[in-house]
Amino acid sequence: MIDLHTHSKYSFDTEAEPAEITDMAQAAIRAGVDVLAVTDHYDLFREVPSIFCDVAAIQADIAAARPQFDGQVELLRGIELGQPQRNPSLAEEVLSNFSFDVVIGSLHVMPNDVDLYDHDYDHIDCDALLRDYFAEMVRMEQHGGFDILAHLDYPLRVMKRPHTNPSFDNFMEHILPVLREAVNRGYAIECNAATLFSWMQRPGPDRWILEEYRRLGGERISLGSDAHRARDIGRGFDVYVDYIRSLGFDHLTVFRNRQAQAYPI
Image 1 (cartoon, rainbow, N blue to C red):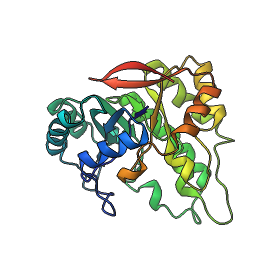
Image 2: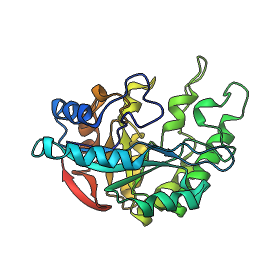
Image 3: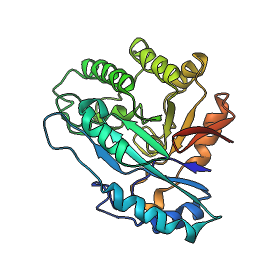
């Protein structure tokens, strides 16, 4: 199995259980993952300071670990590039200075530089925020520079309040442009297993979203645990494989040297 979205000790938000690359490789083997991408955060902002990871150190650790785990797990050089459209020069700098197997494109932060996690959802227009979110995602897709469109349903994980169950059910017209751009530009849509372990407790993105992506001609599905602890690598993948197969997909997409390849399931 493949896990193309994981975080090591080099990501700012792994302080609780920072993992060495070797820890992650061992956890992957235990979880039955034979292709593991290390994709630490590289979040770009317009006004506030961006959040970088030490790409050189990460890639050195991956290179050092590869011989030890040869034949057990393939370690891929990845990065989670947050909001590349907000600071194109910094995005281009990291992509030109380093070679990657896979680049994830993520939208965590809106144009006001506030993370979706930090909005006061009890006192804002959540529908308007979601419309802006999908419009910003299209802008990110049009900017490009990545291979996988990460956690489309990220807002749903963080918008939950005791009196509300947020959903995308009334946002088809806003999601369709995102899916069309993904198909036209060859991005893989990520199934992010963190959704299964959020309040939603189900795989995502929603079935109707992936059905529409497939109807539009989309064929590339990526699978990632979004593990911020080594022990979460590959978590929930049995559920996700069944889910992805039920939608008519017979393979996942893995990237090596930024080239898409099929991984049968």
